[in-house]
Length: 294
Image (cartoon, rainbow, N blue to C red):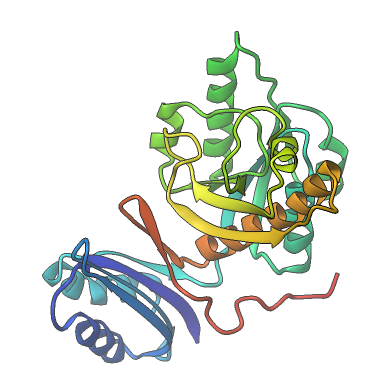
């Protein structure tokens, strides 16, 4: 049996769930997991359905069979083949904790993606990446060559067929044009504090203010720097006994975990953009299982 995921966004109305489940049953599909959310604030309905085709229909046949229901209910919808791994480009600068974490999760199968390239504006991680048999691209970025560097980045994305860009502590601001071109397909990670600290040495600033919570936020990238729809967040407690260096080390851990969880949600089609926010459904059973231990 082939396994698929159906994602649906449409205006809220009576009978949506019945129409979806009825059509899938008619097509010989068995629903194995389902989640839905009706947002009264926006009047929109969101649904994610995992199902197995018990009659051997191809994805094209499922698409054709489901299309009349989708048209009738004004749906934005997609059927995804669960066996197909999403193609991902990772961008990194000189902080390697998120890159290392993602490579490990990818290697053991805990993050089922196809890493088609790693791009960096420095050479620090070339050997690491090449040793994983992943193409490494050094794209140097300066004030003078920034448009040309970003054009090269887009070439790499297009040539590799990448569907998602991950900024794994990539310390360069992307242009509005690129953000718009890949809207909903770029994920960034950054630190989070209360109060918020911007500029140089945010962990030092947090230490000097006696912050008790260190956090991280993963979000989709928009033209508004660090203000895109949030996918995942987490925090860790610190005390007066920690040093500024402790803050940095603890922050690395939470950043890596939050980024990997955000990517996991995106590649399993669990994230729906809802205006300036997101709807993030729980993971389906078995989606965290690894192919091997290490």
